[in-house]
Image (cartoon, rainbow, N blue to C red; front, side, top):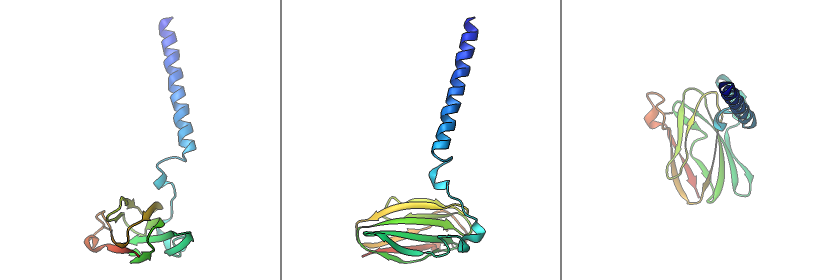
Length: 151
Ligand code: CUA
């Protein structure tokens, strides 16, 4: 009899955990948030918002930067934003896996073809911030960089 009780209890626990896990997956939309939005890497140029990359003001010192990464460049390159701006980066790759690292900040992300990567960063200090690809992406990897100028 004891064994049956234990068996029933552990079975119940397993069902319970499965329900909790299932609920969490449902509640948080399956998988890590950075991988949630997908895009056809062959059609980046035709898919909003990447059909119109650039810097857009969306609020009081708040900007949206829609950017594509491709061997071996960032589009748009050499962007400028005002001091204190909060910038929402929306990134994707048009070919292979690239990196998006902004020197002197905590921004350090992978940008993968087929995925939309979103990062928000506030730029309090004026200056020129070096943006580097930190994932090996081919022969020109070392020269894949740009700058963000904060005025
Ligand atoms: Cu792109 Cu390394």
